Image 1 (tube, rainbow, N blue to C red):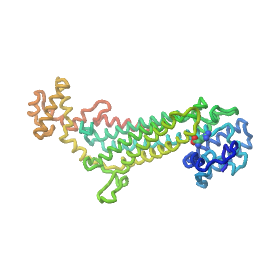
Image 2 (image 1 turned 90 degrees about the horizontal axis):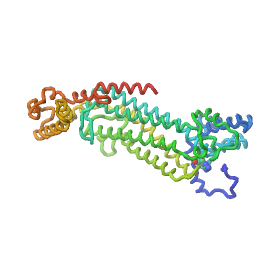
Image 3 (image 1 turned 30 degrees about the horizontal axis):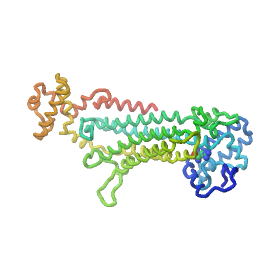
Image 4 (image 1 turned 60 degrees about the horizontal axis):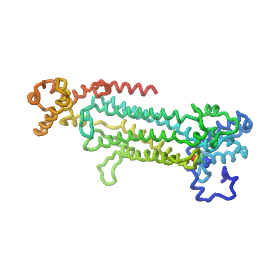
Length: 460
Ligand code: ARG
């Protein structure tokens, strides 16, 4: 196999060494982008009279043929065929059009070429991921809408804290994913910059037209510094960081789905199509999709640390270490895409056990804060009220009573200012209705938040 750099060498490369440096087995994912980038580059070389029109047409025609064969699945890339995808394309082009293929690489290096391919790839995937996030948000919003009014315990420290609407809980995730989508949108601005034209590191002496290439390939900007453009991977790091945060959100939701579908909670039932059984225990139905999303979060965090560590001591400009950026990138993209897809399907198809959720707010003292607030409205300081209600909880526990079972005379024995209204506020529904501050869990506020979510989904 011919090397792009063979001329300076007297001896052949060692076989293990050759395998060791090859990236073809994974960078073949960038074939389409490499071809499209090369076509734009060739058209620019022709336009700037660096090559002749005849040469331009021949090279472009050859590249287009390869692209077509790839799209029709007529071309297989076997590992060992070339050092990397750039060499593979040039070899293939030479097979098709002969020695003139050698003009493709004028005013270009694999260093700016790989940076270009990665940016083109990531721009595409970020759009896909934004769409997948949007679908998940839609599933959450629709499930929240369908179950409006369902009451559940709200937790802190995984202890019953205050009753909330189930829809409010789901919408919390909607807004987390909205920020994840925003992070993707924002980082895409910095991905959307053309590095081609930086050549190896210093730019080129050929009269190239970078603006033309940028517009051919749909880039919004052009890199300002050739050394920077070929040697930084912060655009991938930003994506991996945003992905790590997104996976953290998916993992928390997974954890709740796993808890909720346990016998102890029994708040939801997952659809059979997103569960598996046990090879030994016939009764088992396991929430595997949620478990694996939670589990794969580790690999996405790992990918971020992998690349940060790889980059941390590299001198300018390009170093071969940077070839190691691709596997963590590709792995993160595929993990995110599958996780997002499965999560929205799981949410869409799960059954909500409304009765169990509501029942579990009974007798859990989760309306104690309402009583304290009530006394504050009657003139006590919050600390006095808090202490007094704490005493009432002890009284209930010692007498095996629920807070909501207390009679008016029992209430009055704790404080003279308690009246009939106090009995009313002890119901979970009243506690929820009372949380009418902006962003709170009252039905009115949750409806507003769903309304806003709909607008958000329609906007972009
Ligand atoms: N396969 C290389 C990479 O992914 C492409 C750039 C190679 N450049 C070089 N000077 N060896 O980073």
